[in-house]
Length: 381
Image (cartoon, rainbow, N blue to C red):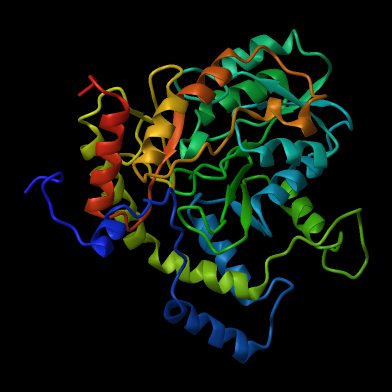
């Protein structure tokens, strides 16, 4: 029976046309969290680096190998901000950052007392290229003290190349890997990961810094806890950015379920990739759903077609999202920040969209997304 010849009741028609949401976050169940809550009840330790938080940090650090340390924070934006502050960079100096990123990156730079300098990303990787940034340093509009490469939608940058960049230029490198929980495994450069509810492995609100630099870890820890370091004396101007034991309980339950959840994320990605293969001009990020996974699906489209495709998909009941808008450089709050020419950023803003993706994406939802894309890009199948 074809879709056009099917006889539907009003209720069935409504269900068939229900919007396919662009994201459906899912955290651990109450049942999975309960044993950790019972440990909190027994210990009566609710915050201030309790046993559950220490266990969470140890388990996260294990993912980055021997010598890595993890410092958790209330969110990844605070982790970026405090890591930059802990580096003791010259106030008012420039921090090179892509405009093609979520605004949290640029907000963190400003909160740390630095000035974002927006540099263009590579057209293929959607990320800063260390060789290109190295070339641009000679043309910077002021002293550059740091650079933040951003793992685009969970795809990790080339850390070997960024380590060489730091060694050669003395410009500090801090990696914003907010969406890259799955792919992030190297802490030879300080790296920040988000544990927000919308991420592939989340606990609600949270984030962490992973590093092999014990001095950096210790200073960030101080900055999350009023400047305290084993005493009640404030050793530096700081804030309160600690995670509670309750957040740690959710995080530990999420880590328990991560191996099975990771497999389900990959299965959902493979299903979507397979269905959308019939529309060859839709381009997935390199390795997405094959070598690494994340909680969003951002695809490349023919140049300049994002608006049209988005309009058609929404008319078909398929939600979309421009996760990074048109680039941070267009935000009013960053209008006074210096910027390079940004042709790749501008092109990506017109030729990428976020498609519906979730750990429990159904076959019917996958089919609707693929059908809507085929309708939006006629003649491409």
